Image (cartoon, rainbow, N blue to C red; front, top):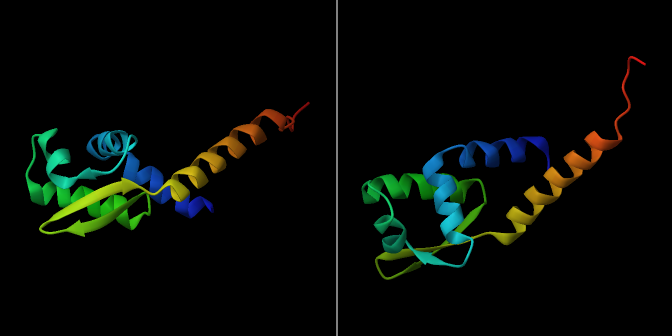
Length: 99
């Protein structure tokens, strides 16, 4: 995963509502109607948030009738985790330049 991809994911997760949606999806697939029950906004607003989460690759969607069902894209999530873990690992081993 490259820095531009991580920045896009961080931007998507930078919104409180989208971060809450990801938390809700962390325990499995949810129908859009179930997600909507947890928020004080309209279905078009949910669609906007889901579009952003899907476009960055963090969430996948499948249609069933008139509803969409959403789930975390585990591959993207794991790649983000690996990137952040490596970033943390690199900061532990960096030597100061002014010693």
